[in-house]
Length: 304
Image (tube, rainbow, N blue to C red):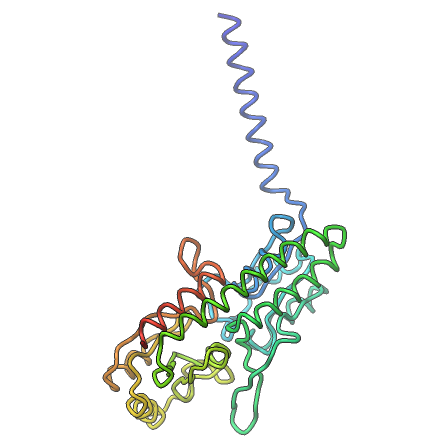
């Protein structure tokens, strides 16, 4: 009996010790930390660092970086970072990620640096279109910029980061080729992509679509602001004129107005596209590769 009690005691003590080790592992993560502004950038960063670093994101899936308002918890998060990553070109409204990093004295990588740029009309001026990741060729630029930043803070693991990066760049090249084959199923005259706001210019330029968003739905203005009845009428007329078969809503933009325009124009909604944010865990859009594949399949099926 005494022996059984002793064995039982040892078993309980062992289990308690293992549980304590797991708790310590969860609460004391000594890896370097990357803090990213958007879900796309966080995914790119994970492809580069694997499990070697922690990768955290300010925005949750579905949140709009243009309109996001920072919270005290964001400042506390950035204060713990070894490196911050932002998109740039004012995707983060009022440069909130850059300001968080500056206030905390943290280094920051601007991922669009060196990307091929397109511009948006904002009144009489032109501004950078910040949605550059919608071209896989530009996505590769993001990844290389992240690699450079990561190597600066952890040079001893440079070879590992470079190996992961090369593998992911190969996957982006495969994605680019696959998209070209898919969009070829849509006749050129039917490649009219009407979406909730002007996020898809890079995709459209890369794959020979005409991009259109109802006037007033721009990155420069708050999305959906300034859509007058006249602008709405012009959008409906344009859809009818070009014989657009379907128009699309976006995950991070209120769909109400685009749904009204679809009804007025007599066209169907072709689906919901991932735009300024990826999907939540467990969805097909939880990674950049997944969100691009889902978008392409919906666009092709809606327009061909």
